[in-house]
Length: 320
Image (cartoon, rainbow, N blue to C red; front, side):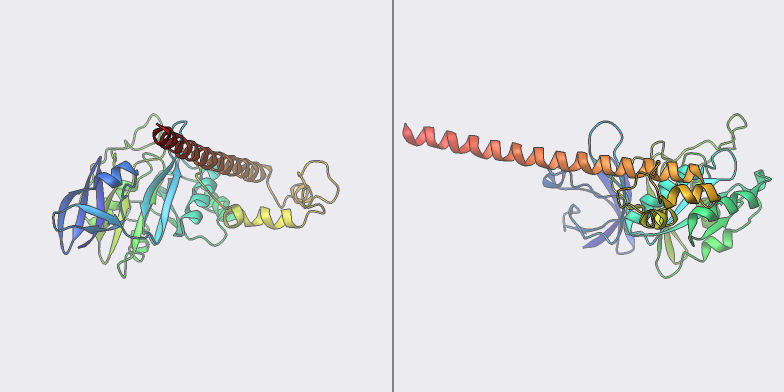
């Protein structure tokens, strides 16, 4: 039977199968190989009610897992749109939004910015303008759950069985938005804190909800946005275009003559903060690629050592 993962609880998965829901474990081989499903996955369920296979993913949003281990952490899969949610108060941070955007482009899903709590900010237009400078055609929706502002625009995405994934920091209003779309307070939320201008975050796991003719996935707030992989050509297309115009292909954008980046900064066409974000992200992605490649090479060496060790043991047994 084909089903879809709608929530995850350690090694137990809630699966939607043929208009019903059931709890299903995964096989021992899947646990051994760390092949764990995520919310949004389509899976094959055995007659005994066990998940035996994860079907190929259309899209997958991933990041580096927290901690020192070099490991990919899939977040959600098979989503058509990913809403990057941020509030229009103290959470609004362009550098963070650039990182989110790069991550979303890498997933294969279509990005969209959702700016929440418009009723609590007096500089909405200025912040939208600053975001438009880095969004390059990515839709931007300003909403207020308190005033019902912009909610109908979000509903337009929930058609034709489309799936939306929500990402963003804690307390930016992801759960509140879902409650508004559902028409019920399915997800418990609390009033905004006056100390740090954030809502009290209660989401601790990923869960998918049916809304109209579509689906929406709530996710816990991200404290760290560590890139697993990425391509800056879409999220920083303005900077990449300037880089291509530099006289030297290996230009470091320092004191080299003919540097299009420096010229753009002098003319006010490129902000130093934007360049700094770009260079930092490029270094981080390159560093991660090197670590992943090193890990693969190390694993191959260990595999060869194990094989050679087994051969040596066989030789000793034969000689005896």
